[in-house]
Amino acid sequence: MNFVEPTGRGGQRTRPGVLTDRDIRRALGTGELRVDPFDAGLVRPAALSLRLGYEAFTLVTTGPVDVADRSTHPELVPKEPDGQGRLTVEPGEVVLAPTLEKIGLAGTLAGLVDGTSDYARLGIGVVLCGQVSPGFGHETGAVLTLEIVNHLRHPVLLYPGARICNLMLFASTGSELPYGTMPHNYSSDHAVVASRLADHVRQR
Image (cartoon, rainbow, N blue to C red):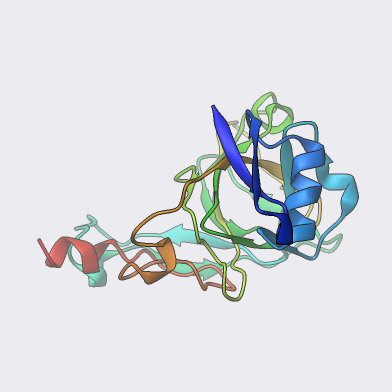
């Protein structure tokens, strides 16, 4: 696999594989990748770690959920931190929380987001759709919304501001329809928002 890396005024050159640490730093320098706030300590050998944001919402339902009917969708109920600033996730609870960082990808980059093995080994699932499309957040930067699930029998205490997932970056030759131009996208979200699936289903 190759990705094309701009060299600024000198054209393009091709480098093999996933973006490694030096490539991530280079992409930050050229503006292909935007990360705000950026902490150099989060750059890993072949990924960029992202941190848990300072707000969270639990999904609360009152009956069956019809994906095409927004009125039946779960309510996003804010979760307040405890006295020590920790986020409590109850057994079986589904929590939506943003990354602390706002991300912006040029059309030449795509990404994959996944939880870390540190959390998985504690019975905590940190998941997302996974794919971060070329052009995501390119104009203003956008948070990634994470779904956090506690698979244990007791509450789990999480620390906002701590590393919680990894963003792996890949080359992209660009797309005819950048993600930010698609209808009902999440490319400009600066906070957690409710699902827009009903808008897609109604159009079918």
